[in-house]
Amino acid sequence: MLGKIFNLFSNDIGIDLGTANTLVFVKDRGIVLREPSVVAINNTTRKVVAVGEHAKRMLGRTPGSITALRPMKDGVIADFEITEAMLRHFIKQANKHRNFAGPRVVVAVPSGITEVERRAVKESATHAGAREVMLLQEPMAAAIGLRLPIEEPTANMIVDIGGGTTEVAIISYSDVVYTKSVRVGGDEMDTAIINYVKRAYNLVIGERMAEEIKIRIGSATPLEDELTLEIKGRDSSAGLPKTLQISSQEIREALVDTFSAMIELVRNALERCPPELSADLVDRGFFLAGGGSLIRGLDKLLSDATGLPVMVGEDPLSAVANGTGIVIQNLKDSRSRAY
Image: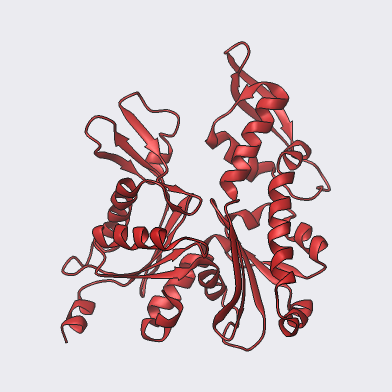
């Protein structure tokens, strides 16, 4: 009875706690919050100065008294205290109209995290105000969010490319047959671009510029009309600001190793897939989700490498968050998927 009363005065919340971005889904309202996973803190008092988009604008631009940082690394908590402060801010924003009781929260996490890392996520969410916390594997959440027929006894394969990790899962009959996670994703792409620009042009660029390059001209396969972009940074030799043009061909070269790691991950999954389910994938292919799936030509690259049809899911950036939302909408029936 007490639980039912609490449910009346709190929102059930699904959280896609990503390395790059955090999305919050509130039951009966949908995705209500989509913010960068960035926190700015005062170095002296350790108090939070800004969270989300406001904090991201501070990256690389703060005075010595303030540090803007990303408390998530490779899909898991790198800074427990700051992650807790970020979660508290996001949960408060999502639950601001119902403050009587803390919400029940479903958090999507990488499939490859350790028991210690799972406990850290649960404790962070609990300390941030959650009444009950359940964890859901990100590939499963993405498959649910894309509304793949995971209840059927046929193979559903998903590749979720996030900021810190790329994960593959083969799902059949509402359970994971195989899953694997590698700590390669959007952040790795940004780092590769930063290193390439420095090596090729002696130009030092920041994370924000690298991300802009990736989004605007990044590609995994040759483009019919190759793109160029004017980029700005600091000449590492002269120490002065500098502007130059860079092409999509060069960025493709910079990202070769990252794409190779993704191809290897997918091939390993297919090699370990039971023969009966492999037969399903010949016709059904597999889906891509996550922000990394939006890189031009990545679906074609993976299709050429595997010989299977590859589709980018509808609204891939929201797939995991939508999956947590579907779970909280049907919480009693979905507990078996949370762990």
